Amino acid sequence: MKAARAILVDHGNDVDKLKEAEPWLFAKHAAGASATGTTGLPNAGAATDEGKAMKRRRRIAGLEDE
Image (cartoon, rainbow, N blue to C red):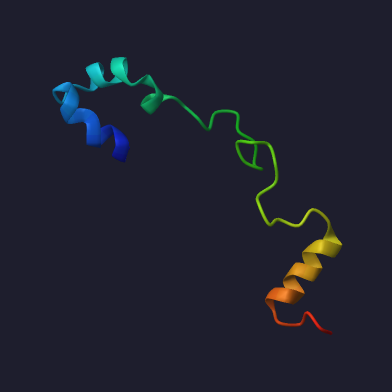
């Protein structure tokens, strides 16, 4: 939205002209995207199994050495 507003003045404040010149601004990028992100990979730093998840939680809580 911010990008469209920033360059709208370059197209005479005409949204139709902007859509024609810059269709990527109006594309539905999230359509069909999975819950894991647009790459299909898990989020960076996300644990992939319960053991890793528990280890991460213990580290965050400061209980890593126990």
